[in-house]
Image (tube, rainbow, N blue to C red):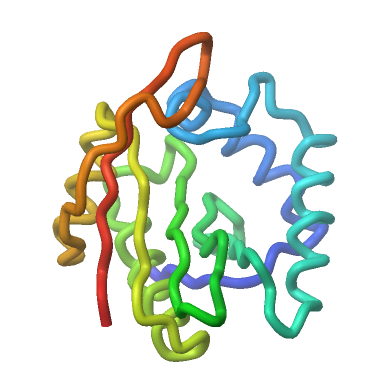
Length: 168
């Protein structure tokens, strides 16, 4: 299955809304509130399109494209151009899980971050209960760096996160 990354376009509004509007995605990502609507999707696309125009963007999010459809997202967040590091973020719609798509997309994003942006460190913070993401990061040779206790307040409680990083 061919997996490509590209900048989000307005035509992605429907597929982005449909694939984001799911309990597991809301559980594992900060800032996703259900229901996730087309209006939310449009607002998100407009926000990330502004970053595409900057010479040194703070965040870069790309659609994970399968058969011409945006089925998920992968990106770099809090890009520190001076210190050469950024946080990796990703998700994929439920109908596309378990097919190796996210791994292919993340590999492309890592290549982009290390080669194009000249990053030295890319890290990910994962809720401790998100075993699928932990396994994915380990398979990509990310190293466990530690646990942050009660670092994120979500759904009425504080959650712990693990940090994993890949160094070039």
